[in-house]
Length: 209
Image 1 (cartoon, rainbow, N blue to C red):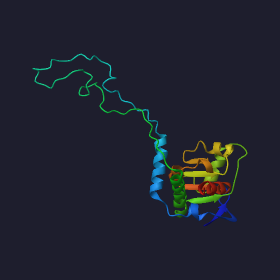
Image 2: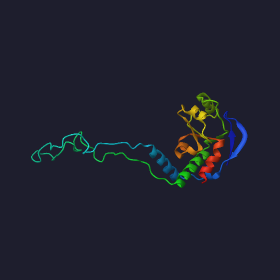
Image 3: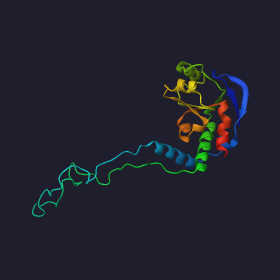
Image 4: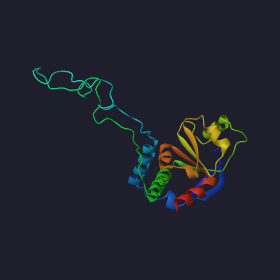
């Protein structure tokens, strides 16, 4: 598929780039997307939750009442889960939520995410640009020129660019990554995907392995 290249002022440069149909034009695999997004979110979880169980609650182990003749159920320690302040039954323990996902599935998920954005016309190609110094105002001007000032956007660079990254860091709705840092979640979480011209070769190379 052919996509026109625009500059940071939102104007057509008169040039077009050919996007690989094997990356940007496949039939999306929703299950692969689901698994990759699930893994990404699972990896964000710290898993440090912990509840005290019966053996860990502070308190005496003395039998709190006699075994028989009270008319109520027998009871031992006040640390029993049945009593207020007692231990928790099967409470959460520290654990890792991460799980393995094959590289083939992850590549398919990213291809599917790109294809979804291309199909929805939420993908634009912008010629490479740079700022002399980090300047959030300059980045905001780029967003306005592209009509993205009120939308979630993801800018994909061909290589690390400190000035562009720092210029966007204070903006909650916009983020900047390199083509090697892309994830399916980030692609789908953005309303609009802005691919810098220099990132296309790396994206297609990474996903064609």
